[in-house]
Each structure stands twice: as structure tokens, then as C-alpha cells.
Amino acid sequence: MEKNWWKESVVYEIYPRSFYDSNKDGIGDLEGIRQKLPYLKELGVDILWLCPIYESPNDDNGYDVSDYQKIMTVFGTMEDFERLLEQAHQMGLKIMMDMVLNHTSDEHVWFVNSRKSRDNPYRDFYIWREGKEGKEPNNWNSLFGGSAWEYDSHTEMYYLHLFSKKQPDLNWENDKVREEIYQMMNWWCSKGIDGIRLDVISDISKKPGLPDKEFAKDVSPYCHGPRVHEFLREMNRKVLSKYELCTVGQTDDVTTVEALQYAGYDRRELDMVFQYELDSFGNDGPYGKWNDEKIPLRILKNIVTRWQTELEGKGWNTLCLESHDSPRAVTRYGDDKRYRCESAKMLATCFYTLQGTPFLFQGQELGATNARFSSLSDYKDVEVGNFYRELVDTGKLTEERFLELVQFRGRDNVRTPMQWDSGKHAGFTEGTPWLKVNPNYREINILDQRKDPDSVYSYYKELLALRKRYDVWIYGKYEVLEEDHPYIFMYTRTLAEEQLLVICNFTDQKVSVLIPKEYRKDFLKNRLLIGNYKVSKDEIGVNSESGSAVEKEFLFRPYEARVYWREMDEITRNEQDDLR
Ligand code: GLC
Ligand code: CA
Image 1 (cartoon, rainbow, N blue to C red):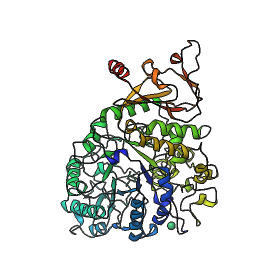
Image 2 (cartoon, rainbow, N blue to C red; image 1 turned 90 degrees about the vertical axis):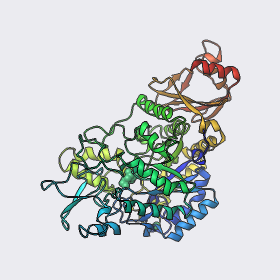
Image 3 (tube, protein in one colour; image 1 turned 180 degrees about the horizontal axis):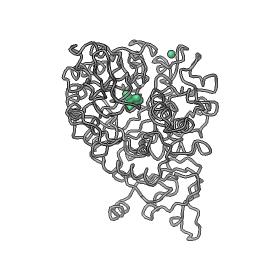
Image 4 (tube, rainbow, N blue to C red; image 1 turned 135 degrees about the horizontal axis):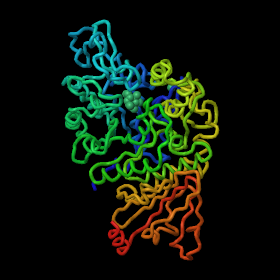
């Protein structure tokens, strides 16, 4: 397999509004990020993905761009950006920009012109349609609730917005749009950025004629559309291939087959795409993403195993547990109360020992939990307001139930200010934070965790450092063991004569684990690379009956996780091959 720097890197997602405020206005900024670079370096991450920092009226916190070539005033200036980039580079850190290319803000000059008249030269930069019998042109709904069409009385036509009505979709069929976008991308790339995350890039090609959806969850009219790969190849030719970049696409509802179309090694499109099957689990219920279903371990293992095996040798996985769009991992997949630290460490072990590039979202390294605000009015996200109208105003959900679901799935739960210390506003700002701080910042903060060798932070640091030291950790081939075990996730990674064995208990109970015979011999004593509990040197198993160490079972404590390493001799390798 080809080695690449971005396969060996760890990406850390920064939500600039909430990272660190350097000038007391309550909003994080570029200078704040620059000041915290030493922290990020110490943690051991490599690429900093900055959520959009461009000029924006902030209907969707920067995902509504009004000028791609200007820095959002509250975040600083272009000089601040250049200083940040330069200093990051000096420290060996890289910068990945988040580019929102499917839509702009309605305040972007292109749209301002587009909306002026039916024959404005920019009209065709966006997707305008006549109404159908006095109603919307088709039945598409916005991913933020309500219709995807907005009527503009000035020219008496509708424009398409897959997201909020202040985020009109660009018309990628128009060659001029694509040329403008590529020019802008080249402009950024020539500044020396190191990577690009492409926001909802799967949505840039819509089916000709914009046909109705056939059922509520039908995304086929606008997702993975007929020209999406043609556009990406063109972008690759005209922009991406000219620089040493790491690219990752946000491609909703993507299957492994589609992932390989976007990011197969032979495709000349992108390097990786995010996997959404885990994150969208439960979303097919009556209220879409508003559900609080917990994913059964068997399904989780099945998804992970499918992505690991189907991409093997053909494409590269992203290992993403949290983002600015999804809940805290420890809240969603672990236990964010009694076993918060144990389960946060277990999840890190389980996911970041897989094959792929790890993505962390700020605060994840602390085992941060969902904010769970007690009042809907503390949630500022445009999505919450829109769905309130769609679900509560219409009587489909009570306000209490909606609040519960928002506490579990709402995006602001993770967008709260970074918890730097136990002081006022968690040390994030000396002003008033734009969004409330998670009330638990006195118990969960960076200052305390950096001092504590047993903290989630210290564990992350150790884990990320280990990952870099073992080729097998990065490039090894994945194989699941005990696939049907309902409580334990166990797998191996193999590369030449090295092998890792990963065992994770996904429950709050003690679970006994019998390691398959062929793995017992070497994996026992003194080969433990990392684990989230103390394991005494002579502790091998609990079942002393058989007398022989290799026959014993391990008793895994709540959310216990361990990574063993071995170097295989020829005999073991042959045994392994026979088993396959
Ligand atoms: C992506 C972003 C999300 C944003 C949306 C619209 O899903 O991750 O935060 O709201 O696109 O740009
Ligand atoms: Ca600020």
C-alpha cells in the first residue's frame, strides 16, 4: 500500500467561534487559535481543520459564505490568517480549510445580483424555478426543516436552498460558477494551505429536471447526482492535483461503493470521505435525525467492519467519532456519567486503532459531554429553530420531548466554548461567550487534565503517540474477531510480521473474554501497549482452573480497552494463514 503523509496524520477539527477568544468579544478568533498552537502540538495532532472562517452573516455559523476571499471580521484579518498559517507550519502543524461550495450566503454578491432580475448575468449562478400551480417547483425539503424552495416576490420565482433559506444552492451546471470556484480555490491553495474539507460536496450535482423525491428520505434527486464525479475530476485537474493537499469530502448517505467512487486510489477525485452510517443511525424514524436511539454494538461492529474491509487496498477510511454536527461520542456511544473517563478512553482506543485517518473534534480529547442545556432558548442553531416550527408548532412533538431530543442530537451541544480551565467562562473568554459554556467545565477542563496522568487527555496523547510509532497501527489490515459477541469489540491489525490485537468492552458490566486460541500465545504478558485500566504484570486471566495461562479468560472491567502487540514468527504467520 502506498504510504502518504495524510494517512499517518491526525486531524483536529477546530470550531473557531468556540475555541479561544483573544480579544474579549466572546467569540473565538484566529489569534486565539494561534495562541493555543502549543497546546495542539503537545496533544500530538498534525492537521488543524478550521471550520469556515470566511466572511459570513452567520445564519449557519460561517457555512453561509458571503465572501470566500475575506476573513470573517470577528475572526480577524487576512494577516491574522497568514500569521497563523506561518506559525503552524513552523511548528510542524498543517492547516485544512473547510470549503462550502454547494451554496453561498444570500448576501454573497453573486446572489445579490442573481436575485435582481431574471436576466441578470448572475441569474444562472443559482437554481431558480417557476412555481408549480402556485406552489413550490417540487417536493424537496430543506435539511434544516421546511421546504427547500424560497419564493422571491421581486422576480416571482423560487430559488433552491437545500439548507437554510439564507444558503441558496449554486448552479454547478453553469461553467462560469465552476471557473469562479476553482479560481478561488487556487487562490487559497497558493497561500500554502495543506488541506481542504469539502462541505456537502455530494450535493453539487442535481438530477436534470429536478424530479420530486419518491419518499421522505429519498436523497437521490440531489445527492451523488449524475455529474458529481465529473465535477470533482475537473476540480482535481484544475486545482487539487497541483498542490500537496489532503482532501476529505463530506458526502451524505454514502455507501462504501460510492465512497470508492469519490475517493478510490485510482479515481483522481478526493483522498477520503466521511462515513455517515454510524452517525445517521436511527435517523429513519418519523422525526428524522431527532431521535435518541442508541446503536447496538452488533450494528456498530458491522458498519465498522464493512468500511474497513471494503476499502482495504482501494481507498482510505476516515475515523470520525465527533464533529461540529454530531453529539459527543461519550454521550452517544459511551456512558457520560459514571464511566465517562473509562468509556471515552475505550472509544478512542477502539476507533483510533482502526485503519484510517483519525479526526478529533475539539474537546473530544477531554471526554467532553453534550451540553444538555435545560432550555431550548439556550440553543442558537438555525436547525433547532426551524425544526421547532416543523415539529412542535405543528403538534407532532411536545416541547419537552423535542428538548430531550435536542439535548441528545442538537449541534450546539458540542459547539460550546472550549473548556480551558475552571475559571470564569472556562477560561474561553473574558467577555460574554456567544454560546453558554457547558456547566461541567469545573470538572472537565484542560488545565486539570494536563496535570493528571490518568486523564482522558493524557490517554489521548499517549494513544496518538503510539499510533505514530507502529507501522502496523497505520497500515495494518483489519480483521474482526468474535463478530457476534454482543458486548465485546475485538479485532486485529496485521502488517508483515507485526500484529495488534484490540479488545474493547462496550458495556458498564464486567465481561469475560476468551481470546481465540491462535492469538493467545504471544499476546499475553508484557505485550500490552495501552489500556484504560491498570493491569498487573502477572494478571493474565481469571479462570485458574486449567492451570495454563493461555487457557484463561480475561475479565474485562466496565468499558475496559486494551491494545496488545506481537511480532509473529514464521510459524505463527503460517498458522494465521491457515485460519484464513
Ligand atoms: C454541512 C456542515 C454543516 C452545515 C451544512 C450546510 O453539513 O457540516 O455544519 O450546516 O453543511 O453548509
Ligand atoms: Ca474574539
